[in-house]
Length: 231
Image 1 (cartoon, helix red, strand yellow):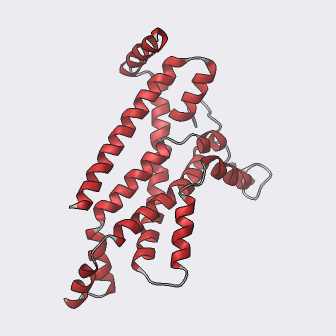
Image 2 (image 1 turned 45 degrees about the vertical axis):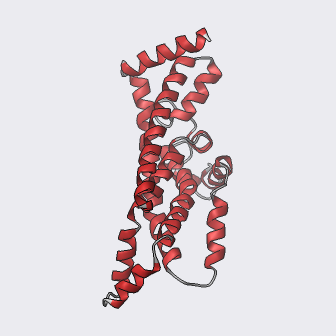
Image 3 (image 1 turned 30 degrees about the vertical axis):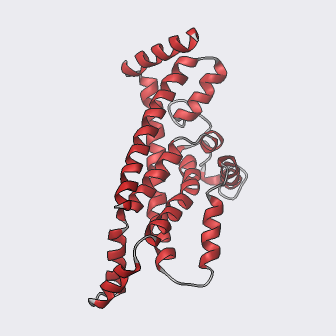
């Protein structure tokens, strides 16, 4: 108990001292997670909107596949991407392995189904009367889609926030594809795992505190937008 208390106090002091190593690790985490979420959103939101708004053969199967991918373990994604970007694989010449780009690729695969699925849910919750009213007033298909998108905007933002919250806390992909290189691919979760293995609890606890604060803030924002979608 005394060890935990001492580590916690030292971790707080380390955070407020703005330690360069802590700042570097947090910056790498925010950078790769932010880029991953951005690209996943640019692909996932339109995909989810088209699936929810459209009517086509195989729609239900596609939704089932997206829902299945929500439970895909990060180590499976890491292994899948590794098999494509390792030195002797198809994309080995691009030298992506153990870079931030490799982490981004893996994290995009991880959160793309989250963004798409939650976007489908947000669009599906919109009352059918909005579409009928817009069409009655003379709106074309594109204008009607814009009306529905505007009504579902809080749910879509919540989907993006949830995706960022998921990706900032993952460890398997970052470890397998990034290699945990200090100052380059070391994220908060991989650094915590490394420091724990070394028996260096202070930095691990400091990063854990920062991650908890970030997670709490993300969930607070997420619940805010969930509340807005329910009104």
